[in-house]
Image (cartoon, rainbow over all chains, first blue to last red):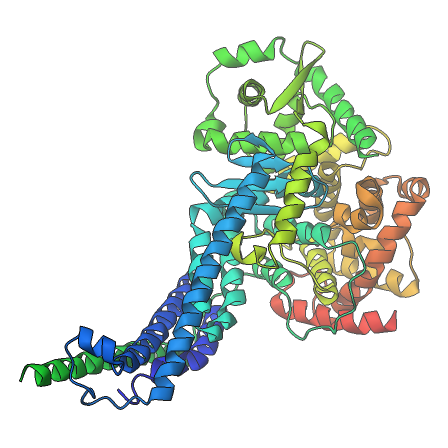
Length: 304
Length: 333
């Protein structure tokens, strides 16, 4: 337990960069599943490790021990008191962050739904009479596509179809579940924040590809995205930020539509990520097994 | 502005159409009796309804007849969509209260039903944006995220490449409606305004002179850009993004002149569109379009001239080159 329990807490630091780079190389749909899945798995393992650490510490408290009919001190327990206390604090933080994240999403979705209620509806589209160009998919049953008039006017008819097909792909693919899963995972382990932008990008690419297939013309799809982005950029002068070395998501999406390239995942990255996930899960299981074992021993000692 | 332009374009189109396809009387009634057309069988009716509603809102306060909507949708979907289907959908939207209609000739013209000018919607959206604490993007998948200046420049270059002609034949779905739009907007003088018209013009230019001699077409703008901010300096870069180029600078009204200006040079090569007239007529919009795209025009053309095959399908490598060229060009300018 002494080593195994720490591994799931540290592995996301290695696995998240590997997953991010792997996601870059994969097709959008696969990348989205990989990123969200890895994040959830890593978060689950690290949270389990925290819980095990805290629980082991809790066993030293007489009331808890009495509850479990344990003999103090628990045999085979090598977790120090400060570590257990730290784990307990972190676990509380995680629980708070998860709750906060979840509540914020519920509130935000409700707010978006109220905003959409003010619009005009036809089919699965809700139009908001607003000059600011904006468009998003509003999850729900049924999901809705919310677009402002400013966005509709910025696009020509074919580009509008791209926009609608893109948002429909978000709704049909239940992409908001991916985003929610990752947000909750990030609440569990901050290293996973590294995966947020790649997942958002993969989901947009996924919807872009669906839209391009729906309208049957990748160039039109690329143009729609580009024009929408140019129309949506803020008019007010922005504080002059240093030009970033990396390209933002929108030009990358446009370029990807214009020049489709075969995705080839680097084997080493895939192996690294798989090893990280496997190790993380194995260590969490090992720690759990250890914990279970020490309780059994303690209980056995009690019954003797 | 856009209303006036669009109106003229639409009237011209309608006039042209009337010769061979007179508008059916009592369309709404006919539609209820008519069988649903093939297009609606292929697409769920909810999707068509959404497209129709989008077309009505995009018309910017101008009432659309079923013929107008049909033309928009055929251009967008590349599918044959029966007028009766469109009329049915419009009638359905009217029943729901999503659109209002007025008599226009023997049929109806439709307007999106708007409550006192969208105040509720705007307030709600502002609340949504503000309250989200920057978290909105992680909850609601947004169509486009924000651009920083470097992204914007790169994006313009990419779109400029995209608007350059394919070596091969143009995609079947785009060719036909584009041609129709070009014909439509050529009817009334000076009506190259609406997004639809602009698109038609750019597609027509693409299949015209550039298709024949891609190399020459790719290089010549570069010379012009180097020479100075001529009218055609905007041509290479902004052909793909006409409306957006000027819209932010001077409001939606200026979008159309920007579009006309940006696309006239290739069109002039093709068949003598009134380029000087347009630039003269819209000095403000023209200047802003030039101002915002001149930057991008230089590097894009430069990269083409420097690259191995101007006018060839821009690859990822070309994109990078163009971007690097963009940085250089930006510094030079």
